Image 1 (tube, helix red, strand yellow):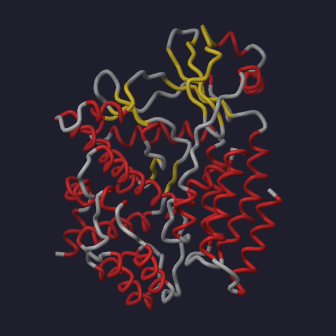
Image 2 (cartoon, one colour):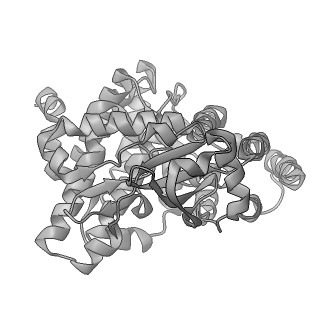
Image 3 (tube, rainbow, N blue to C red):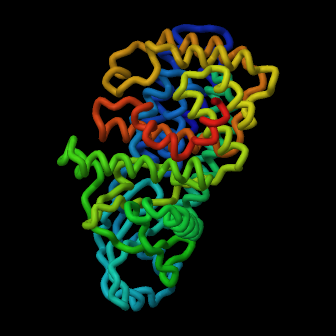
Length: 419
């Protein structure tokens, strides 16, 4: 950790005095972060993953390097995590379960999941926070704050605000009572849409055996979403699955304002009734109505390549002041350049984005009032992951094509406002 901070100071001085190849220096620093985060695990992995998605904030070489971080780790011995069961459920915790598998079925940086059966017979998945992880995370966050300081002087946004939102998200993720509340609220929100209610499944929460560091939920067996879609590529079932997956997340983001922030294949299953099962609500966010409406308008403007409406949407969301409308319009014109706009992953991978990013940052530096309201970082994380997953599951489809079937349903107000 001390090594990270020391190199951050050196990197800052090199930047201020323009010493040597700065791109290479940033790359090496990001590589060091990945190496240390992969070794230490905990919050450093999650922080790096979130940061890697913000290519508009970090130098591209940094984002590309941080993208190699993976939040999948070897499970800890049961003897270690069983202490958490004793602490949260009491020494008689075994009496609450008919059976409890000692081998974890999943493990990540903050906790792991075990399969079990309740005394009443229900099959459940029990998520256990690693003992002592809270102290580790607090130390990680303190060190990561110093590490991100190395980039604050070359970014458009204030990374202190980015860090604060990410920090809050990680700390909330370690409180499983919050996760239980969110899972139940999102399940209720989705159930109010009759069509979504038939297509989406959220595991039931068992409160009697859940605590702050223990979460017991319905165990649902099913095929991983990626495996199901790939095996039936191009079929009616495959296309329907992608459609309803995208709609479920857009409903949360455009209508409810409370949304699951981690739509990746590991958190999505297909059950025996071909419903999409949403798992792991630890990373979640609730945004204000003002921000939600501004982001809806922003997506509509982006799909239409309307640079004026794009700038107005950021003002509505509270991200810029009125004096910067023209400057942001110029930014949008760069974003909507046909050479870079609405690309498939294959097209995206084949392009040299260095020129585009230089143009983008040149225009962004003219924006003086840009701020990141609470929720923007997590919203764009979820939206970006959703589009990436949609494009992966439906090869050849462009982002606008993935979103288009849902726009009349969710963005009718924006369409009427424009027309």
